Image (tube, rainbow, N blue to C red; front, side, top):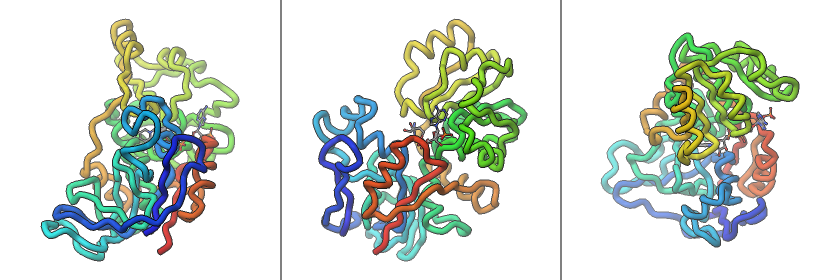
Length: 321
Ligand SMILES: NC(=O)c1ccc[n+]([C@@H]2O[C@H](COP(=O)([O-])OP(=O)(O)OC[C@H]3O[C@@H](n4cnc5c(N)ncnc54)[C@H](OP(=O)(O)O)[C@@H]3O)[C@@H](O)[C@H]2O)c1
């Protein structure tokens, strides 16, 4: 089968299409024929080894543990292991591969108890592939920030993958959402459910005197020191940018000095979160925003685009067999 491998950290052209052995499912695994995957900011950061600490996970000098990126996928169950009870051959599914990655390929085996669900009936494979990581991350960080109906919630970086889901989910949870993005994306985030939009190229959200219960910086670009002044006492500042690293001295100082809380970690990914997203998608309450689609053969070009940091929602890779 075709798969994308990388043998060195670096720019997009470290990604190479290679012919590798098609995997065979073990007893508790399903074999997925992949129809679509995505290029998340996380794939690009793993490719670049950003932060440097990514090398502790994936090899100090070169990628060794994970050599095929691709965080999420949609596809069809082509074969099942002898002990599989939850899925059948032919099921259309969508899934997160988690930090095992491996979706930049024609096939991927996944454990039956992984973050897998039947594909939402109203989404095609392209749309479904763009849900598990962005949607799941937005959901977990909003929950880590204690989201409640009626709260004032600010989403910084509202136009990216995590951001577009965070705006929709926060509005669904009954919060009044203020979104921060650049001029080009103002109309889009408004249409996703933001009540107020602040264009960060024109003004700094912390200077309006508004106070928020929850500030969710999805892209790690807000200024922490001024941002926390816009938090209500006991408010939460959450950031998905740190990819699970500890909030460190900033978090400790914040809590001790003001009672405000910084969260950079969440609970682990759970299958029930994917089922929650599937139900919201099927109810028409949530939708993935798709910016561009590429083929597997165009993976370098797709990574180049995502590296610009300007994607709107999600970039999907369509895998043609
Ligand atoms: N912790 C986890 O479990 C986890 C999981 C997934 C992702 N992540 C991390 O979360 C981060 C976000 O991922 P993502 O996929 O949502 O990113 P993304 O889609 O690549 O973000 C792109 C968006 O960022 C916006 N942006 C760029 N510079 C900005 C700035 N200065 N201020 C405000 N917005 C800005 C852009 O909007 P404009 O063009 O309007 O500026 C663009 O729409 C990444 O660092 C990723 O590694 C963490």
